[in-house]
Image (cartoon, rainbow, N blue to C red; front, side, top):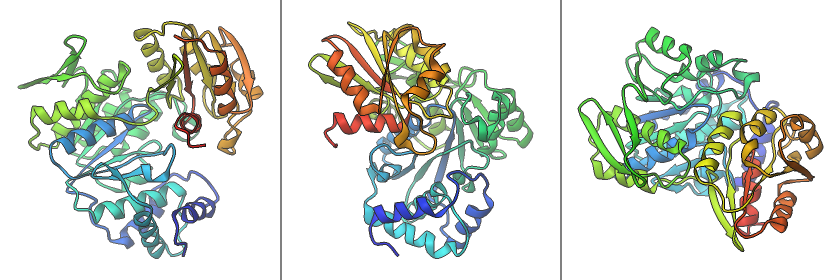
Length: 422
């Protein structure tokens, strides 16, 4: 077997003929043979079109502030695979991941597993050996047939439901909602972030007896002033500092995280809630840099719902000068919808190729053809994000803002440049 992480990752990526294969039979059978036991004393599983990663970060941060030992499994990663598996606030080391992949391989036999399924099993194996109070599991795609759904959660969370991954989840909001609510369990809490979720979500919850707890209905949240906000439900209210994570939408993510923590029915004092909300961070979510008076913001927004949240932030926090976009998109995304959502705030579009992302990538000319009717400003084409970012910075003046977004690949490419990792 391989002895280094990079070789293992190349091996599991090449082994399965398809990147995505929905279903729990194969991964569930291997999980049973691994005989891991539960990954933690309690489990929160988080699904949603947008906001999953931030909500995981808030839950993890609050729980650690309360003194719990926490594991968090997220995807995809930006710069290193280790980011996907955190134990007690730290990314796991290469050697631990190699040992976990060896355990998966020993139980797999001739059962084919995708890259994500193998990674999920490895994370669960590591968590089960770490003596965790809480495991926070982020769904990779959908919910009902996603590999993390082999674990029975104590609390399930659906952050938002929007149009994305229609090839796998369905063509409309109701169909996508049915897939995401598949993580709910009978008689267990289901936290729903949206005030008005798709009917399919609540119908399924009521059908199986899940206890639906809805934002804007069963728990409420609102700013108190510029630096504080209030979270409340019947019989409980707390005033908290604003999240360190920027963007108006992060208030909802933080509120959902508090609802999920409280649904575990464990003691968490106000100080832990406040410390967790104030200290939670996650890379690639309005992550800011500065170069010679130019603000650079990197975000993983990649669908119209996320782009609208980004647009709301641009309105709430306008730049002193122009805002220009470095935008790359995968070929199966609604690029026109993204451009439409942001169009009013962008003065120039630097359209970047995404061919390095593999089969789902596209060059800048193809991207331009898809968004030409939606563009409201000038646009230029670039071979990749690195070239687009370089040109954007070359043309920017002090006070301008350069926004880099569109895919996790785009965010990762920008972060490598800005953090000097090239």
